[in-house]
Length: 410
Image (cartoon, rainbow, N blue to C red; front, side, top):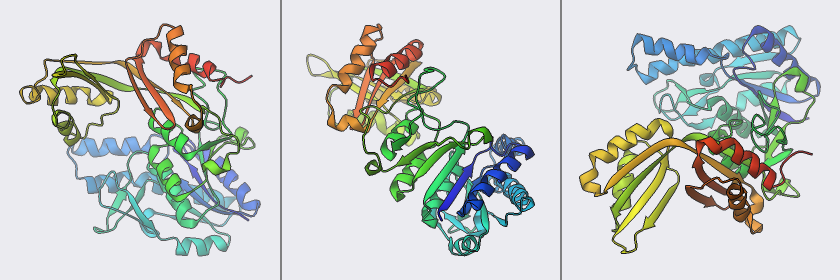
């Protein structure tokens, strides 16, 4: 017998028919003798609809009341799924976040989970009852009000619940069969990975891959929760997904596991900045205060050593805000010119095997050079190399790198 947490997103529970299909899948796990908890999102589009209602009533609405409204979407799906399971003869009971409770901080709209009380849940599961738990929500530890977790909240809820239940596995059902070496829409020869390490998945999630949210991967890695990505449609249920696990579970590690890309990039260059201690802090401090995330950074010092050109990237949606902040402080920062563009994309090569193999960067640079693709910015970590290139070369670069590292399926 295994203890399993199953998570189904909005598209998986987007209609009565799909909820009934989810119930059949859950029933299969119960029939196999497993203890099961299910975490579900609101029906597809419902959270956006509820957010729209809040915005229409008052654009500057109270975040606490916003949480009360948008958390109702999950209440509907846990009730419907519990009814669907009961109709199949499976004993099931729904649970809201506040009923367990899932304790969070009080950052309404973007709360973080602090603790989950699973004592009653475990008792019921050991008696054969399926626990159907609302994702995306919790209870503020100090204000005793409903909270929501923000982007990726249901995935995070599922992994946190799996950790609290000491589950054998957390299955995330989504609209893909697993984690691929790259985007199959760009590279038809992309391969589905049987296993991938937490670190690789975290890099992929943060660098453009949409399969899992970064927060959920971080939590899985912290608590050692084995996460399996699987397709939610019935025709794919017999196909194994991708297991996200510790490095020790992967016998033979690939040098490179995947190629990702992110179009949500904009580049800012400050020319002729004084090359003095504290200048970088004066530049990036206001951006941090404005909640603007700075990613890739390159600094080029002039021959005379008196000035430097500083290039960095920010999310596309923050470009105008970043430019405004920097222009307002031009006299203080002392740069000669500012240029900004959003016509760039970040392409990354990821793999834990990089730690023990030389020449990975050279392969990347040669593959791009052979196709006439100019590299504008480079950053590296222990298991990742990222480059910034012109957006028009995205697909060519991804395909070239996928082939260069031998990732194409036979």
